[in-house]
Image (cartoon, rainbow, N blue to C red; front, side, top):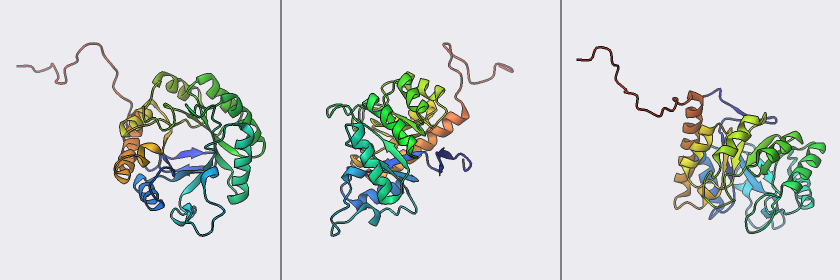
Length: 257
């Protein structure tokens, strides 16, 4: 569907699949997986990139930021202060204003600390950032993020890197119905069918990292996710048949012998 464009702040994306750049075996594998995914946007953990050692390769050597939209994120931040400092650094480094905010609550679950997240969202928006917010699947807290100026809501499907897939489809559906900004499922997706389910619920997109990077064949899995997101989006746009509690024959009754 050529005209089916995802718009986040001022960015227009042809692909509704956003891909992470961590956990791959090499930058070469990262670049090949991103190409296979067809993604227009990739997330980059600002705190984990090499900005000091000129002798070591850097991500931009393999993924051209003029062709792929870089989305700096605050992976590894556990306080509002850490997250704010990280994104201000990203703006200084590359002029990035569209960013992904995640403020984690603890190291075991990596669930977002929503008090710190909402506080950070409010501050960043005041400073001119366009903020895509990683949040819990609580509809009330997701709405708080939007009310404080979030450009996109990114509820988790399940814990980061768990591969458990969508654990609460009802809450995700509620978030979709109430949101006026894009809803992108982030974290916990395990396989291509999970992405299809998220898209069939009406999500505007999905963000995948571990499910691709940790697959036995990452490049092939990236292609699978590309197809899965397209299939799920087309299925949602086509509008599924109504569910019935009784059988309904496929063949017409008229003209029976």
